[in-house]
Image (cartoon, rainbow, N blue to C red):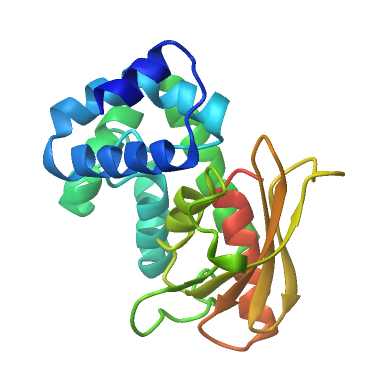
Length: 229
């Protein structure tokens, strides 16, 4: 790992195998050493996003977990109108993220705006596909889950949303790349997504746990808000 970190420090591009080794190392730190992970985050998070289109979270449980909690407990949305925020009303796993966010005025304002958008976008926040049964399924064209920089971490973030059952890539474009990542409604049981790294745009399907046009459109709105699209 020292040689890989040395390359990062020297801004030398990592190969696909080195990148995956780094991601495995990041996951190990996150799960086993929060202090070491915090040091790594401060030193490398921006660089990973800038050079590898990879977002690593500041906390093991953060924004996506909060969204999922609110989708399951919409009555908790009103808690964000209380000052100070009653942390005891939220799961302990979310406390580090919420404590940090509400100490940062800018982050706190952004969180409030996103939650307001979420509430408005899904008038009845419960009208979403139900949670999947079992583990999520990943399907990659040509089995290239380790070849496309940033794609695996992007899919793993999407997997936090329990109404998603399968993620399946189907097209890669090196020319005429998409200007932005986004999610689009396709049908009652699946959505379309686009992920772009520095080399290409990767198109994929997002299969849902139910076949319902209204619920699928709501799921699409939630993902676009959660991913800041």
